[in-house]
Image 1 (spheres, rainbow, N blue to C red):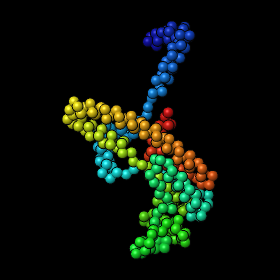
Image 2 (tube, helix red, strand yellow):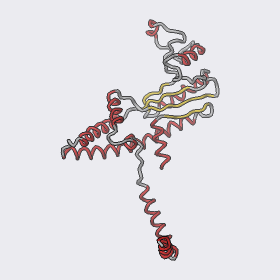
Image 3 (tube, one colour):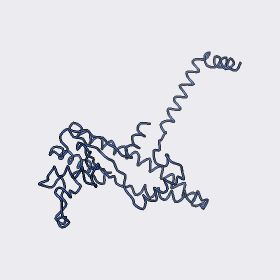
Image 4 (tube, helix red, strand yellow):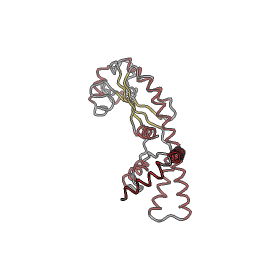
Length: 259
């Protein structure tokens, strides 16, 4: 009985008035489409965990005490042997290009790490300068052995098969964003404890709004920086296979995918 009544209502309202139905659907599509332009995605830690998550609170406490910047990693697998002159020159050019991006603080590659066992250096020799892959008269067989067997470098600088290396891209720390987050968390903790004064409630709302606005700005800027890094990587894809990884990249790609 109920299904029959629904069918009759559907026929009366929809099927017998096709033009009205099409107009209503078109109007709704336009309204939702227009509202959708203001749709924003928050891929920050705030959106992925509970407001008072203890693990996140502990992480932020440690991160504030021992601050470390965000970073990206590029894996590089050349068509020529990794420790050949051609590959070393390409890694050097890629590293130098990446350093030109304003958000990049430093780039660490296999060319920059100190070589302590190629051959082995005594402590007294360190005062004469650290040996690297860019130093003259390097024994590449000893370098390969050091990269693959050293407890410091093993599986970090070179893959076990000796075909792939990685470049660590350290990004500049945004102090303004960090300060806003710290202030918001301080006030949020007081709010949870019910210890906010009326003036602090207003301050909490203002800081939270400013943090959301600035965080959106940082996310937009990061997407542009990721695109620039990929543009630089494209210059070297004819000679090697390159992949980009890291949390900033994952967050940026997730937002772009949803949009």
